[in-house]
Image (cartoon, rainbow, N blue to C red):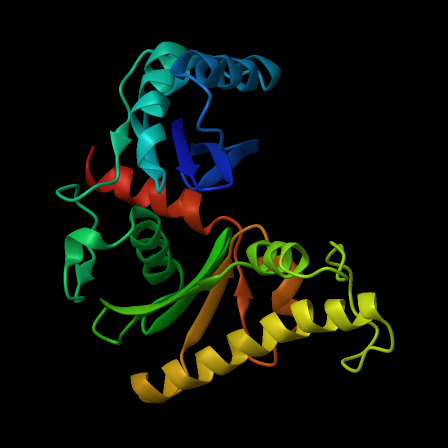
Length: 254
């Protein structure tokens, strides 16, 4: 079994895989104040509640976009599982040809998502990851990572809108009745849901033009399931993308 951890700005996903099968996936909040011991306690609780014995784990792998927490999380795995996990970073084998201005600056999460998307869906492919930020990245027909776009995430946009105005409230992400809202809340729902969907559709269209035709589009991340159903492009929802990408990279480095 493999321990795979994807640490984002808002949440940390902890997965246990046996081959390609995901046995469990749990999430906890990313908290800069937590120590390695506190994260180790959380991992131990997952193992205990799900009947996982640390000695059954062959190893572990971490991807992180939160540098201050990367070392504490590695130490937490060492405390809870008894081994030092592999960290996705420059120099680790991933099989991805990165063709951007400075490959070393590419976020590890984007590497993991691209590796998984190529393996599961082929190339060319557009990968959308909807978390704290929404990233839209491209792999061309030669399986080269060629770049992408970063936009404010759904919750970031919604929070900024409410905080920067005097009369607009915080709202939930429920389905809007129609595009033309007739009250403040419905107008905000329309803007955030249909607006984000239209943003994705527009970016996909522009990227497909640059790629030379229609390509496979896959979306992952906690908020993808909220927005993607309202997109007009065909988009595959894949909540396993990051854990499977971590598995693939770990296997390349065994």
